[in-house]
Amino acid sequence: MTDSENRSDDNRGEAPALPAFDLKNQPSVPFDGRFLSPGNLAESPNPRMSLLDAVHTRRTSRAYADRPVDRATLEWLVGNAMHAPTACNEQQWKIIQIDDADVIEDLYERGSAAFLQGVRQCVLVCYNRDSDNRAWADGVQSGAAFVTLFQLLAHSIGIGSCWICHLPNKSELRRLFDIHRAYEPVALVSYGYYRNKVKTHPRKHEPGRVIMESRFRAEGLVFSGTRRVLWRTIGRYLYYKIPPFLRRRLRPYTTPFEKKFYYETFD
Ligand SMILES: Cc1cc2nc3c(=O)[nH]c(=O)nc-3n(C[C@H](O)[C@H](O)[C@H](O)COP(=O)(O)O)c2cc1C
Image 1 (tube, rainbow, N blue to C red):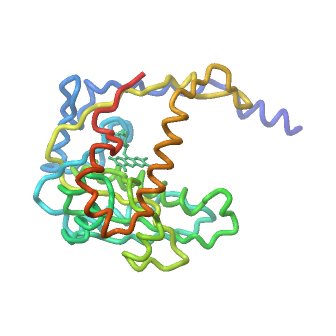
Image 2 (image 1 turned 60 degrees about the vertical axis):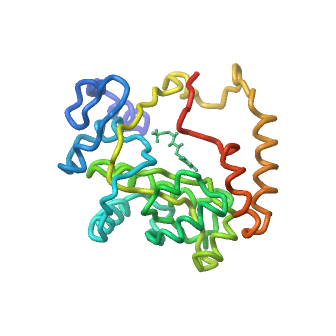
């Protein structure tokens, strides 16, 4: 049998119908049409919830209950999130647990995301950067895969989280946390038991418009924000060049300029 005959054999038969997802009728998290109330998961963790329920009911949370997440729970999260794929299966994460209020306040004052002021617990996800494929930033991608799983797993047991890249320069973080030169900080993740409702975000694009056949098709793309992004990039670069002692003083004045995700609008 030729290769092409083999291939057509594999393709014979209908693909099984996949379930449509309906937020209103999923059993995992109460939903009032606009907000999800995942607090029930903090009371009754449900890590066996369906994958679709987890994907659709997880939303970023930036405010958390006072009850701290204990070490055993963090180890459960990290242990399961370590099933994320990694480049060459290297599995080279290092996770810095941060629950010292002074350290979190210091991060805020140095110009990290303003909501950190109300946060008690974070992890700084680092990944080994000794790669021969740095052009593809495969260490960063491996770290990002971990964060995605970490957030989903956390959600399933009632822990909300936020992926944070609004941070001082990596060199500054390296000094602050004594990060070994072979490792790269990938992202900070704040977490804590859900306190509030979380807002649903409609998807901005239809999958049919996201998938392109065989090559990139640029027709119809709109780049309205390019100039604004350029100015923000320059502003950001200069801001984080300011020595930390001065940045600390400026912090109350810089918060209004911070990009807020809280009130996202949709096209
Ligand atoms: C790479 C990355 C960086 C992010 N950085 C921040 C951040 O610095 N501050 C913040 O409030 N949210 C941050 N977020 C969270 C996004 O704002 C959030 O995922 C987005 O608004 C969509 O909301 P959802 O997670 O509820 O779907 C980041 C997310 C990603 C993936």
